[in-house]
Image 1 (tube, helix red, strand yellow):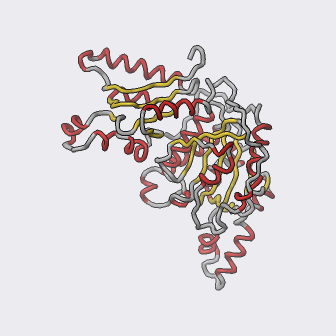
Image 2: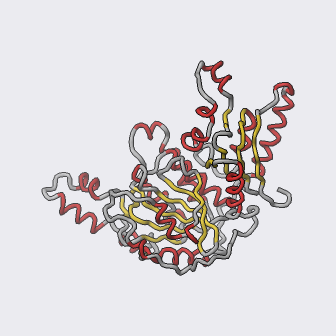
Image 3: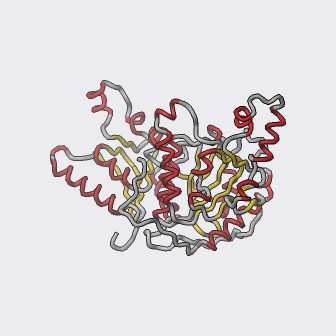
Length: 391
């Protein structure tokens, strides 16, 4: 922290040494305190390379990113023997704390690698996207990929049928420098995609709805995943590029009981609080509260664009007409009228909520131009000790 350098933790630990009693607990608490003080000041990365238990799991949990080595790394508060003793549950090390458990189910880990060498190389690459500290300038790398590069395939990549799925990674791949996207949390909450890339050499954080999974709906896990990533980028002055294709929040008792209101508000809070450059492109659907949440102009978005076939409305035409015109004799005509009046980007553009309706193939050039214009953006939040994010 004194010299403003990132910290990397390589973990393989059995936790607190029982024979040392409270001294071992005090040692861990001292580390935790330093993790917390360093949070948002210098990047902190953890690579779990072997079994890590008890107190050894909380230091990685306090860092910005936690990665695991497949088949050799385990993370758990208590191991299988203690679990068996306390709950009478038979569980293996892998089932309890392996990479599949934490990368795909709990979301504790942000990714897993096949071996130690691959993991160490990945950490090195990740550090190229991160500044040295929260006061250092963003990382800019020389690139041979022209900022003005237009990819005509983007004009056809999103299906016109709003119910048809596609992989948003294909869009990201065609937009970013040299098709290089470093995805984070790839196996967790797959209905949202987050990761690092570059535009004209400038490092950015990308948040994108994934229509290929759950139609791109926001749910509890995707909201938490997105919020955490947005706040990390904001802490280290990394601009945010948001690609929107979201039909809304996932409905149902399962989500309501799991706290979708509270957890969805985390993503809303993160975007509203962020002061870094924020560029948003609505690729297709932006319905309801999810339109607001996904870095809309109303949450201090700097540059907000829409592709020509985008639909920005309270809800989709079919659902809206079923409510508004439930007694209508001609439902198809009512749907067509609704789409013409509401389910397109022009009403939002007329009100200044969308800065421009752009040709998809021109998206990269616009983003690069905006990042250059916003390079020296200075925006501050009201003075306070800290906000009270709905955790």
